[in-house]
Length: 258
Ligand SMILES: C[S@@+](CC[C@H](N)C(=O)[O-])C[C@H]1O[C@@H](n2cnc3c(N)ncnc32)[C@H](O)[C@@H]1O
Image (tube, rainbow, N blue to C red; front, side):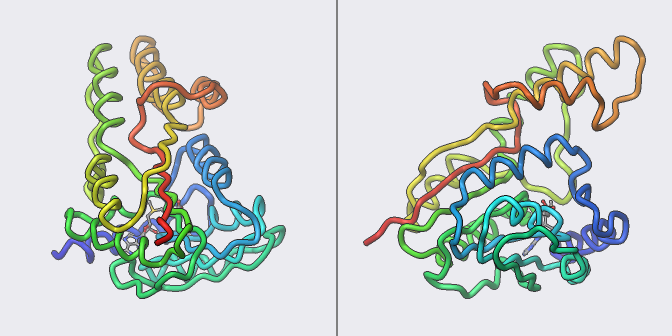
């Protein structure tokens, strides 16, 4: 099966399973909360924004509650977009519109002040398609605009698995429908598209070290099942973040004004 069909099928099932829930595609609510908080931190009010791979729109609405935006949120899954259009928008500031679009087919040129993702580009299962998605998002930005890439990257993932190995834990494997990004490749490729790398935010590092290394180690020692959203794990989500122990992170880029 061509990979896109496989990925669409995956998100169709996710849409059926989790409906309008904020848990949709992210069962870990601490990760979800920190993702939203850290995306919002980079967004400025009253700006034209494009969100790529918005899923059921629950996170888009939460982001819109914190920042007044003119937001277009797109996704290639018809089931996800149908759900997003049903989300209650009470409390959202500014404008929000949901639309079915494939990142590989985006045609926007120099329109948006911000383009952001939350774990979308990793669903493109070869590097050529990842490049095309990055290019389409770069093209959509106005000169001076910012790209906020919240994605999963190999470097943090390897550090996380090394720490697990130190404690005798099995490595975590990426999901079958994900291809994690190579940070240096992304920075180099976006440079060729006129986007300069501004900063990296490893906002989940301490939380992942606690919830994916320390917690499973103790859970194994006391023969308890590993669960999401335990009080034990939650503690780590309040720590300042240090190190590079999470695959999920934000890379921030700015489109150079010519
Ligand atoms: C991990 S989910 C995240 C959804 C949402 N950002 C969230 O945080 O809840 C990834 C989303 O990317 C979408 N996606 C995957 N490939 C895509 C593509 N080629 N174009 C647009 N959206 C895509 C999927 O349908 C899915 O909703």
